[in-house]
Amino acid sequence: MGFETVKSNVKSVGLPKALADVGLRAANRVVLFKVLKGIAIEIADPTFLRCDEKYRGMFLNEAMLRQFAADPKNELPSEFLNEALAKGDECYGFLAGSDLAAYGWYSAKPTALDLPGLRLHFSDKYVYMYKGFTAVEHRGQRLHAIGMTCALQAYIARGFRGIVSIVEWNNFGSLKSCYRMGYRDFGNIAITGVGKRYVLRHDAGCRDYGFWLQRSA
Image (cartoon, rainbow, N blue to C red):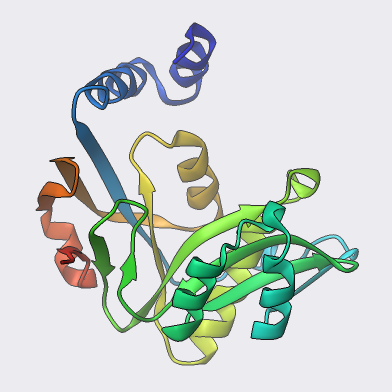
């Protein structure tokens, strides 16, 4: 981590959190140590339901997803896509003409994390948002936040209470964006490990959301 990054963190989140971030990154050079913040949103902010008219937001069907997956820049490898579609996950995305500008994935079933061997469980009252993506040329348009809010509105209409997600404790930029659109913290999961051998700690706030990590075989 460079000095400018530390300086920016001090300015945006304060010295204690900036120093804790430095310590966390240093620890990860020796052993895996992550703190995942569980966040939830239950009310759609109308401010995030509108975007530039050049974008069309929608749930993307399988044929569209297969087409976009053929281009590596869209970060939809076939192994991921096959697994996500097989378990009924949905993708809310934005098109700019015929191009895929942004997307986010949503699941009502336990979902594997990027960390090998771990699967996240959550209450069936919520949908889990994961794998957000915005193409470089379309960043700065708030598509990530608008997409989540549009999806939230759709899932509430289907009878869900809201959306849950996870963000690493020291991903200050993503957390700031999530808080701005209405997410709130409800709990933390600490992960320590080497390889696929993990020690997991879920705090009390995770219980109300059925939020826990399972070690897969």
